[in-house]
Length: 477
Figure 1 (cartoon, rainbow, N blue to C red):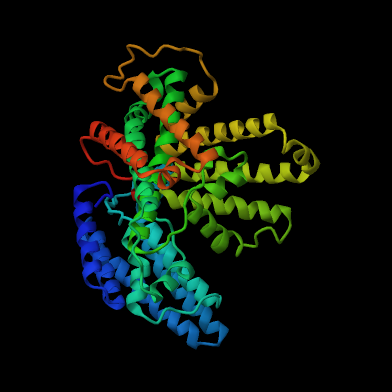
Figure 2 (cartoon, helix red, strand yellow):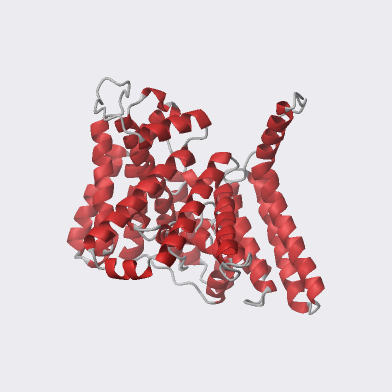
């Protein structure tokens, strides 16, 4: 059930109507829990069993952790939670990847395994709700939060439908206290325009440039460097607008229901270094990896070499989190290397950076250099075939200066219309950097001007609405 589908609007209208009629706090939470269950089962009803399993295990273990003082027993309970959650994630997400690599290794020694191929369906959202469940149990173990005694409230924390299938990854410490007080639904202009902003990002921009990137990266051998660059820019824009668009719609829907979710993006395409980029991109994942992986590994407390190892391992696992494929590991490794190089650079050039921080040319050059790197690394993220990836990277880095765009077999994918959508994105992205975003301005402007923008946006959505519903990219992660 996609946020921009008719089915969702009907589902959401029914849910809100029930919440308005049934005003008792406990009843409203029951309605949200049932609605969240239906929302998830819309894709595949069978997979609700996996969420129920994780929810029951972590709910019971957290209560036992509170009652147990013996540290050895507490560690054993935590281990049960970790194994229970990660085993499910590993089986559904990585068993096929492991089988493929084992078969490849055996074939190198002349042995042909007679194994049946695994065709395991990846449950939507499993990476997101698994990390939420893990963070809850770990926080209870660390005694940073008290366990939730209401099974219904804990179940709602795990299954709350706005963030269930593609985040943001929510912490129990942020969400569970909101369930203790009656929610006040907010159908204000801020929530409405935030949802509209996410909708425009997804339907007009992300889906509008996706076709060009798909055609170019399906087989990059026949294109010149200019087309490869346009394809890379299209995916650069597509993945940001697709994922941040989902996050903004999720946050807006939650706000309408009376709940607050943390922002997941903060204009990452203005980042001037790798560290800043990861403070702005997929914030809920990067902070999760920092708090539950990087710091427990030792962080930067055990010297520079160990710190670099911890950083690289964290980014490799972060890359693998995105999918069971070596191209994601490569992507994570490239960003890990960039973070390490930036850390070394920051250590040896403290005085230079302090002087250059106010130099506009240095700032602009830093942003352009970082975004070139981000654009470059989206290519191995996007292309899984190794030979095609190398071809695209070669043409991206070693520009052939061929400016020929016509008669290249692009069909209806006009480079001009694609370039216009790219220009629209960069204009809106730049506006958000200095003015806080068009949705923020519209929530504060006069009603007539806001209504006029809504009418124009509605016409654009009507004209550019895709013929088929395109799932969000991060559903596959």
